[in-house]
Image 1 (cartoon, rainbow, N blue to C red):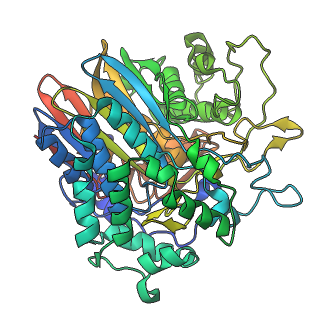
Image 2: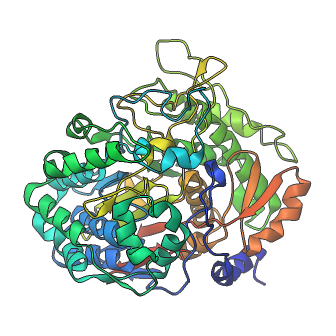
Image 3: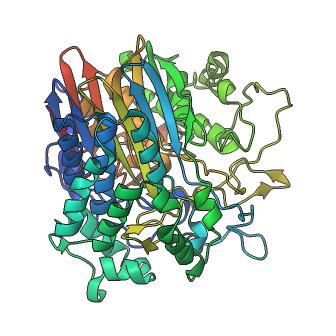
Length: 588
């Protein structure tokens, strides 16, 4: 007999198709509706290969990466080509005007490292950037739409930095797929058309964005042929002059002029662009079931929060409890709530504020946090803990922040024939970012990932705005290691829900033995703050009565994860794309 969990997975194929259309207006904070789900059956969701694998959020982008691998390129070559196409065909989610994090396994050197291409705050920014004259936080749209929310983009410099270090094909070769599509045009996907319709009012506020997405005042429809000559000009500039052409010269001046001249002007300067640097950082790794789950550390909270959740659950036998047990989900939910309490209190850009990074993942600390879960019902309160600080200074007082981190992001996961592994999550933050368009691409609204409040009762918030600082993120590009070698790479878009999406996929795959594609497709059930959130329209809503009996507040909501994953084993590679979006896997 099939378990209830297996039935949940099976029913999701219907549930995703039945999800309600994209919510019309953006809401503040984490109540913001995610990007709408796409229909199942678009492209190839699962693929196997002996040599290489590409998974990406759009079929055209995945094919661009695959073409580089077929031409003898490596994972980094494919990554660059894939991201350049994503910025064209999935412009609402990522692009040259945004930033990202890359976790990379160098098979030759046998090393895992990470690259921080996160956007940075202008040097003129102050902690009151998102406050009104009275010191109150701005309304959401007042903060996001326009130049105020734009940070110095990191994606162009990130792509160039890693290609110079690891790439095999020539830099100009990587631009061919994106240039061909920008020049000749591509068909607007169902997903893009729906998102444009949902954001037509805010897109209309910028002349360039309105002309591109709302020609003649009418939102682009599914199947419309869309060319982007401005993006083609930008690509040719970068192809010939490299990322310096983005961070200086005429394009940089146009970016700054657009940001500062918007109706809601920002502070970005030519100096901010000129001084931007990508930062290589050591990975943050946490043990789980004999594996090492590695990812991006601060300024991302992704690997730390994910590692805390798994670290607490490592003290409990989820396999024995089973996937259909409310007890399993009670443990997962409360472990997540505890991790998010620590996230709100401690996690930010470690270059600017001291952080107990090691202490948050220390085995004895997580054992104490896990002990709090040894009860028959939900925690009445999930409060931040007191991890050990490995700084000479005393632990500083910290207040909890509030940042409306939104779910418009993308994930690329690639394994090449040499065994190199790239897992990159990139973003412009909200759907269509700041809604400002320059050079055929959208500018980010990444600064709204900072806390709108700088202090609470005189106590500073770690994730407050500061000059040059990088806002905290939940992006969680992940590489899972076993005995010093990668066995799985994955990540997802989804704002602060990313952490729960990745955790669910890992638990379903590692603890409950679901094949990779089924683990991704399984209904999303997660908790961040007070409530357990269940994917709207999925059969997981059957869990709600028992979770309420255990003491949880339960909510249902659209949860459009976009997990892209590749498993690496002795029988070869398996790639899988989330059925909720248009992504595909291509392997050979």
